[in-house]
Image (cartoon, rainbow, N blue to C red; front, side, top):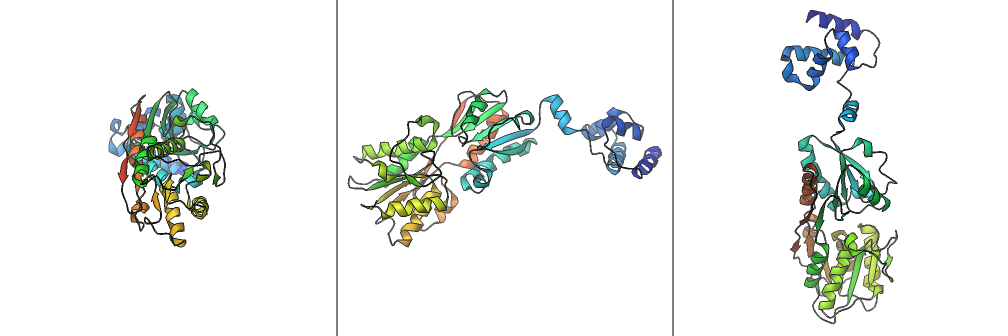
Length: 355
């Protein structure tokens, strides 16, 4: 014990160096195993001995075996890449995505697993694939090329709101949920209906969708919701012209307000607006108030997501609650259990005062 303390003092006065497990053990006059146990297996040493070694290492600037090297040897990093569909700047401000991330982190943090946020706009996964244990993909990435890489990687993959037909997936029944909420808004065959869609086409502008692209409905949340709206309208004896369908590139107030103003200024003016997110629907209601349009007497509005702001708004929004936090928890649990099946989160209709 005295020798270690003396040696620590003498070495502390020397220049700092890049210590390894072997060199620090030599410096302290103990075995490699003793130093390793002090950091990784405290039950193998007396508490007094362990504290002496840890304090000595700390003074010398050594803080334990190289974790990266250990991870490379073991092939386990305790890091999961959470792939967000769009830019990180946009996604971390989105209340639905934030709720999902909260659910994921609540499960992984308990297991000592770190989360690496990764943008779905990135060119490829090459920069991170060798340093993570796998991927949780929240929504179809903006760069579709990443989907093929997730299909082919040997790492674990859990997809959310889309399916790559190889690993676990978590989904909401978007078509059914959109159908259910649209049925609440549609009343008569005289209804004038407009749809404010989210990323129905690959365009970074708010615009009308005159020609719908040939797309696999099952692969796109937005087209699943559009299909649900159309099914409800057909049953109600209604049709919607393509010039009554708007594409909104991002679920935020700026783009949604542009679409809302266009829709509410069009002739004949819609008396029903089906919105593919709550943020879009809230923008519609703000614009309607500014234009003196009464909700729900002159305009009925429904949303999708069930964010907290929608319940506080006056009038409260009728919407679909998809419990994004629970979706995140389930995705993380499926990742931890190496699940290979698909799972669905049940939706709930929240009937407000907007229709």
